[in-house]
Structure formats: C-alpha cells, structure tokens
View 1 (cartoon, helix red, strand yellow):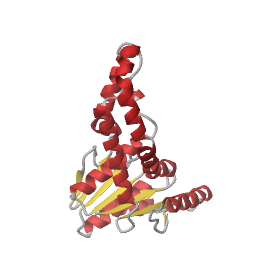
View 2: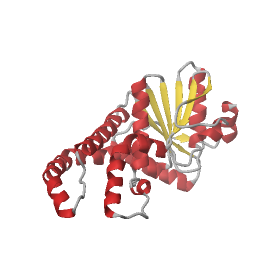
View 3: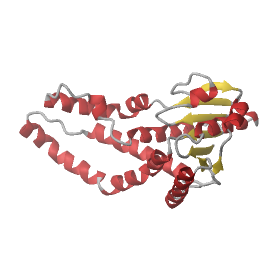
View 4: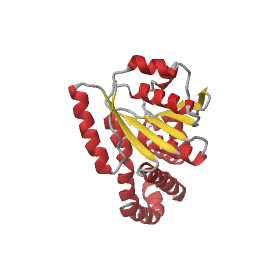
Length: 255
C-alpha cells in the first residue's frame, strides 16, 4: 500500500487537494481510500456524499471515510474506560462524566493512527490518502509514537510490577479501591504497541510520503517552513510542498 499524508495550515485547501488526488489515482485504476482524521471534517462536503467511520464508495476504485473519534475510543479503549468507571463509582463522584474524563489530550490523534494500521492490514486498497488536521495537530499525531516508545521501554515494566504488589494492599487500606488489573494493563500495552507499528509504516520512505499544502501567503509559508523542518527531524519522507490556489480546479476534477 502507498500512503500519502496531506497537511498544512488550516484553510489552505488540504481537503480539496486530497480529494482531487484520490479522484485522479482512482481514475488510473488504483483502489484508493481518502481518509479524514481532522476533527472538523470537510471531506463529505468535498465529495458531496455523506460519509461515516467506514469506507463509503464514491465512484469506481474510490472510497472515502471520516474517522469517528468517539467510536474509535469505544473500540480501542473500552476495557480501560470500564475500569475507570469503577473508580468513579468507588469515589462517589456522581457529577463527573466518565467518557469525558477518559478522553485524554492526544487520544483522538492516537486512534486516528490505529485506523491507518487497520487499512494497511486489510489489504483492500492500493493507496491510502490521509487528510490530516492543521499542521500543529499533525505534528503531534506523527510524533506521538516517540513518546509511547520511551514510556513502554522505561516506565511501563516498572509500573506493572508495582501495581502487582500494591493491588491487595490498596483494596484493604482504601476500602475497595481497584487498581488496574492485568487485563487493563494488557489492553494499554497492546494499544500503544500498535501505535508504534504505525510509526514504523509511516517512517518507511518506500511506503509513506508527507505533502505540505500551502498558498502564497507570508504566514502560511512561514508555518510550512517550520513544518518541513520538524517533519524532517522526525525522519518522515517529505515531498515537495504543494503550492495551491486552485479551488475552482479541484472542484472541476472532483465533479
């Protein structure tokens, strides 16, 4: 599978370029999926077709989807959410929303990474085009696995050992406080290791490339320069930035 990631400052035309690129590749006979990971999805507007969290057929060889972060949280984080719910019940904090408390900063980006891995493993598509959120969120998305790798190697093994010793004591001392059990810890480890698998795919220059979309404005160009530098430092395959001021052209291509 070939993966093309489009990013750039908000409003420069990432979604239009991603949709037009997908249309062109599908016309060449490649099974192409265009996937939006932006919380403020516009891909359905670009294709003029309602989209959900599963691939929707747009035309021959072309599919599109908008990642539903709440749904992906339930699919990948349910075991941890259930444990946290029991903690909330034990603490008798009835006015706290469990789902909101478990939606940590960066979790939406993390689950978007898992959707990429899901499509790579399925083998259903020749090309995956990722319409990312604006640059800052994209950098956080692509750098997330670096933090997880360090945590899994340096901190996580010690935490598991400490929890094993502390569980029986905590229940007696606190009157029923339930520390994370092996199922919860296994779920967390499995989730994070899959995110690291995605990073290996995204860092493979023969598979993945990142395209920075911009238009001829001073602030946009300055941000594109910074993004180009950061992404290169992370080791991603950065292709030539796309200078775009072609809204009417992309509409024509899509139609």
